Image 1 (cartoon, rainbow, N blue to C red):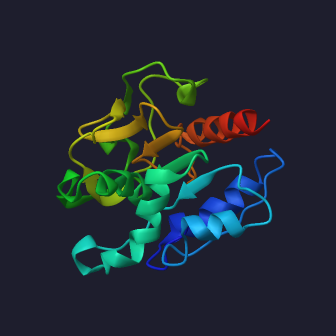
Image 2: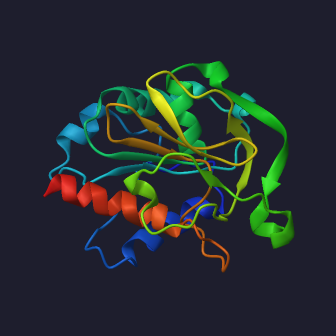
Length: 203
């Protein structure tokens, strides 16, 4: 699910997935067009849904455009991953105040590696298979999830929440960007593992 208020990370996501040699094809749908009804009308049921990042500031967004996203998060049985703003949408769905401005921007894709805070894995979940603990990954955002929503558990953190997982549904959130092509991105396997798990569930 894409966002028209997007930056470079959004445009990299679909092409990156199609280079992973997993046999997956992507369909990008604007966030204001997505709905459960639309999913039901698709000829082929999606293997997974990924909510992309964006570079917009929430106070200036028409949040009603995200009603379809909220509906899907609450009701779909399709494996779902929220990246950056998509991760924050998981928290918005369960309480608007759970996402807050950081008062600054974490732009580690543009910073020296020495300034990057490593991400610590707190729970040994299959989503982290093959990843080092701690690991480094790109951060490109000015907002973050401030409170772990009800029915979710905290999987990883740095100085703030980095990854969450629904306790009962196949839903994951990632504040960092596993899809960004930079040399120091050690979080790529997070996305690969998610897609492999979704394919296994489908099979």
